[in-house]
Image 1 (cartoon, rainbow, N blue to C red):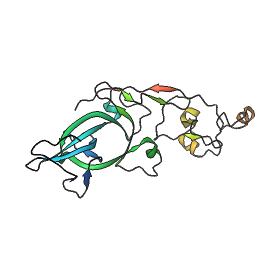
Image 2: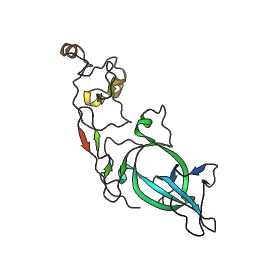
Image 3: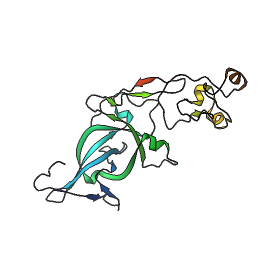
Image 4: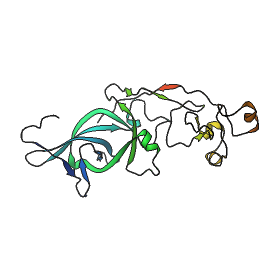
Length: 219
């Protein structure tokens, strides 16, 4: 842990002004931007400290939204997706306006209900270079796009393996039709004769990989 400068002291927690919500190191928070028309920034609190006048500041690690990266928002990015950046900063604790939860990608996909405070992260982002970790992700469906948890996809009912996922629109179906499907078989579970008899059986395209691009964000 970094040493506290003279005249400053580390704090275990901070109570958000005007609320009873308590922020601790490791918590994710929403921070008020200078432009009131912008969405709040999302950050992870790394340190909380107060000076001799009891002014509280927080050291944070910023999360970036896809549209704030070099590549911008792409089709596979979820509405609540964030990138954990290597961009650190020190801000007044008074700019914290609320708390939120940044889930892992896997945990987010298992949420029964996604609340306003729920986000997810599957990439780390280098603000200076625009690089991502990991820099490759698996792709699915005929369109060969990475998985977007906001999009409905159909699953093979026999093998129950999410390796083979399809967007209804890529299969020539509407979302409503996909929700009414009684059967869907992947190529491994369906014989050639089955495919001829069932309009709900499709050929699966192999999984490939795609690189993710980015752009630098300025604060």
